[in-house]
Image: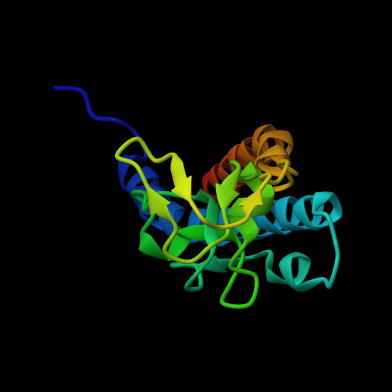
Length: 165
């Protein structure tokens, strides 16, 4: 029966791979999240600046009242690599209304409505708001680069371990 030369050395390197990979992938994820946030902040319409200032990223769950742009799934490398890019918070709760717009609707409290949702009587009508996408265009523009950066970090970590560093 033939044995593989250097199998013990290979196993040691493979055991080191997750720690080195986790460190390098975490740095790549952070850089990618920063890029997405920077682009989203540059695309958001600004009045008071609360919405722009609410755009960010975090490890784990987003703040209450925010919408999630992207969330990495807990992978084989562990839950510590779950990053969430978000917009909105308690002050800028309207992030989804800016991103997607709103339909025409009644402004009156307790306006009578039919079973089909049409206004029957009373209340002022709001014409709706046009959408101003900033969040998902930033994600779509940055997604390919983020994936590439993470793949590159994984490859670099594997090469580093294989070289014995």
